[in-house]
Amino acid sequence: MEQVRRKLLNTVDRCVDEALEGLVRSNAGLVLLRGHKVVLRADLESIRGKVALLSGGGSGHEPAHAGYIGMGMLSGVVAGAVFASPPPGSVLAAILTLWKGGTSGVLLVVKNYTGDRLNFGIAVEQARSQGVHVDMVIVGDDCAFTQPSKAGRRGLCGTVFIHKLAGALAEEGCPLDFIVARLNEATKNIGTLGVSLSPCSVPGCLPSFQLPPGDMELGLGIHGEPGIKRSKVGSADEVVETIIRHMTDPSNKSYLSLKSGDKVVLCVNNLGALSCLEIAVVTRAAVHCLEKRGVLVVRVMSGSFMTSLEMAGMSLSLMKVDEEILRLFDAKTTALAWPNLSSVCVSGRNLIMEPTEKLAAAAEKYSEGSLSPLIRLVLESVCKILLQSQEELNALDRASGDGDCGNTHALVANAIQEWLQCGSISGNLGQLLADLALLVQERMGGSSGALYCLFLSAAAPHLRECCDGAAWARALHAGTEAMKRYGGAEPGDRTMLDALCPAVEELMKLSTASPGGHMTILQGAVEKAASGAESTRNLTARAGRASYIASEHLTQPDPGAIAVASILKAVLSALKGES
Image (cartoon, rainbow, N blue to C red; front, top):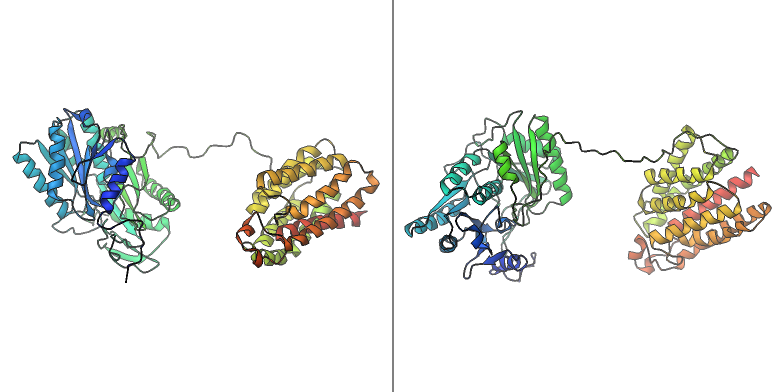
């Protein structure tokens, strides 16, 4: 039986070659070395007389490692098959190409895995036998194991820090031996620990391990190697606290010594399949956790830097820094995957900016006018009918949306009732509509809230100076046009406009009618709104959530249109009762 496709690849055998070609085709600063899975800088002449930097390893960790090629970082990368060390012949070919290009030496930055140590090591020895000035730095930043084996700490995302420091030193023209010494010292101040919520699968293979839903694994490797502990998935804050506590626990022989007052660079690394939203939440949690310990977070990298294919998980890497290490970290690079970071210290920075102009709160005290008691009566009537209609509107919305139309209208009804109890009502109708617009904006939510807010905001200016029939006509027209302009719907699209527009069309007669005829016009508007709402039963939805549902499933009136008709009916009822 043919295996179900779960990856957007052409063939398993060629996926790495095609991925490298895709990277190089889209970036003019990169070239491929013919016959090898090797990517090099296209401008090798620019590093003549300087140390060239070479890294690499198994594929599947993108953007590592080719994403870090560029001025101020790597000169080239040797890629293996997915999660497999590259062959020594390709490593040697890359070394010789860089050396014969006129560099003063070649430095290999290698993650601490046995296959990488062996294959890169073979190439180093073969290159030395040919007179190449070459050396290798091995990075082991894993903080998972309390008793590391003879193989030592695994190389993880902290390797990217070493790429950056090495690139800055090489760009400054430092000699090979000096760079090696500095990097070996820097690796002692780097620690990484990760957590996974799911396995990953090498193309053409089953997942590397099984993890039940709701479980997470702490301390696994970037190839899916086992971690140190399984537990239930906690909150972001809890998971981050667990990671940092384990990383810095002195009883853990692979721990990173961290004390109050230390300065660190933090890297929050997406292992592949976490959403950007989750990574941002984790980043907040990590900065907060470190600051609680008195640690000064000077820089933060947040994103995908060394992944494990589609693994849902993340790792935290910390690098303790002094001013010189921070200077190297901040040095310019053109590497594609390196983030464009600010050089401003993260800890201690003010995160909040106050708005330059604050809108008046709806509960602000105003002097009441002669219309205030009538306005209060009308609003109470509207709130009452919306609360009574809550379940009916929800039921209608379940057929065409997410079933919360009644709830959102009830939210604003409750908010208006609270406002009526604690605040004065402005006698100025323009101010009243502006207050209601702000209240709707803050408390109602959803597309209905946005539409009502637009209507009230656009109508309000027309009633600030005058509130006669002509002013009301202008206000209602302006409000309706704003809803159509920003909402994108028109009458006939099966929305609240199918009730509102016929009613407003009738209310436009207020501009020429005598005051004695206003109630008759309002009565007509209420009838037209009810008729328009009922007509939506037979319309095809062309806007809003309902537009994604087949017409044959929409047999009830639009809930938004019913709500508008109910509001106008409540207004009429209140005014009739008062008169």
